[in-house]
Length: 380
Image (cartoon, rainbow, N blue to C red; front, side, top):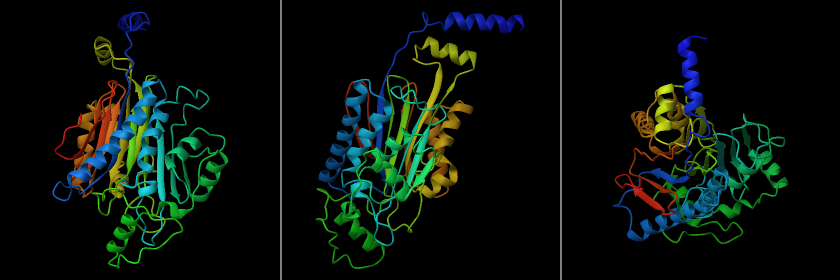
């Protein structure tokens, strides 16, 4: 070992010893409820208020857990399940119909490292995607349960009846497909095919109409959440009904790792950047990113959009904001509309979009839920 290398090693050991490192654990939750051609001109104050209230409720559900020291994986499930149960959003209860008038749901989860409360999870098991679900009441619950059961579901992508059968064995709730029928999504489905909206089918239980008409007619978006917990773990969760009038069996970006979702962390090896992080009092010498996307998923797949954001941060040393805006711009250049929510291990948040609006929000340690809908609104 050269004198220079030895000196660096001594310096690092002294400077980054436990007694010298001031850790400042932090937590933050960021969510989205879909993106697309959402305009003020096509909305009312009541519609906007309904969405912002729903977003705030989702943020507060996740915040409660983070504030109690819970894992990020539990916080994102809490937040997303609120939106899955709300017919305003294109996921679970408010999901859109495919071309044959059926519901097919996707969901995914990924963590930067195994949850603190589940040390038995192998370090290389970072995520799971589920697709073509037809009976799962809350896909967010199912994907979490199967992620935490590696011996039962050892793969990274599962579909349909197999995933639901395994989930049921773990206590997850399955429902009759009629549970997902909502009147406003049915009428969108029929209008999109150029067919009469009436009569509305009677699937066995009363169809639900949202308290306010959704702003996102013919949506392509999703719901999602990304959280950082006090243990320094990032979790990303995404859930969707897909594209209105999609072909039967279509699989979008939501369950495909690296396309619609991503989470990872890595050690900072550059001595200057390590010293700078120490000087700023940051809580970890690692770097990390979590991403959830929403929009026209076919473009996200073609661009490997979510993982590209992380790699720009890791290998080009861009800020989170720079990386997400680069990828959003690249999507738009190819005709793909949508946006991202992303955060890093330092608690930085980015929520760029390239379309008229994206339902989004963030909540930090102060417990104040901040929400926005349109592209010109600032929520950070």
